[in-house]
Length: 167
Image (tube, rainbow, N blue to C red; front, side, top):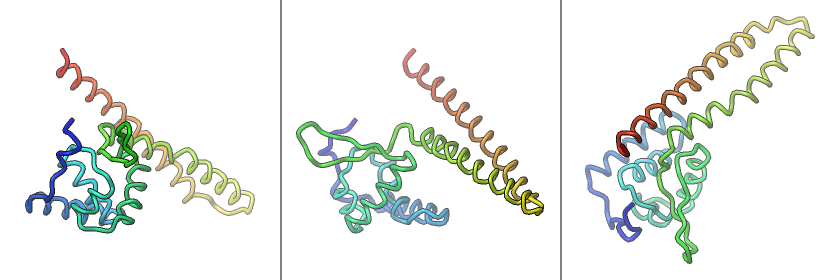
């Protein structure tokens, strides 16, 4: 891993374009534009960044960076990095980001399915057809299964990669 002092003063214009495009892409998916830009920055420069570093390099407010760091951490994309004796927090793009994001998605299905089951029961008690809720429940069960298989396959890919790197 690079030293913390390797944080650039400025970002190359081509990389800035990439970061901006990633911000716009993630914004189109419903995440804040700055979340996408933070992901882009941390993906291309594999060093720990403080929120102040991120704000300076992306030319955005420190408070916006803090808000978006919390969001990205919730999805499992960022890891906190601490230096002994230094009070400042640093963040890295998680080496397990893709696995973490899949686990977060999978984790949401159980409570959602419970809510749908309650809705189905309530509709049946009220003599109403729960067909749309039943379809949604079945659809999300299938979707969960796809994510679980994707996670299993992803772990297998990583395991094979590690074997190649460490024969």
